[in-house]
Image (cartoon, rainbow, N blue to C red; front, top):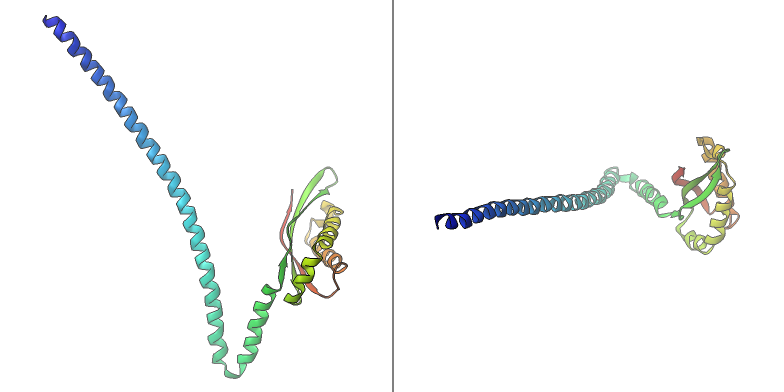
Length: 193
């Protein structure tokens, strides 16, 4: 009878040891999953904080610039109207910038086709021209697309080629709206791949 009682006790002890192993594995897996989720959440939240900090830094910097300009203008007495006109001129061009949607065209490099992605912004002589540009957007985009797709890699590879392309884009736009309403053409993105 003693042997019969010992057998179930030993079986229970073995099952309890196996149960402890399973318990440790389950707890370990749960801790690992919690750590992974914690790291993912930290990275996601950390990236959001950096964006907020960058946006927060940009806004005060612009405000500080304007605040710094105002006391400097007031300190010179008679120079205040000239400084105010300068502040308008500095703030004016940014209000006169009209961004176009990016242009993506195929260009030939002598051996194979590549693609060119260009983002163009136009400096208008006055903000009133914006409505005129928006009304003629299809012909403007068509002219620029035709011009860009006629280029080769060698045409746009160096700085001189890019400056020539700016002049050609300005001429193409001026064929669609009255000349003299666009002061400059800026490239804000220029990628050949």
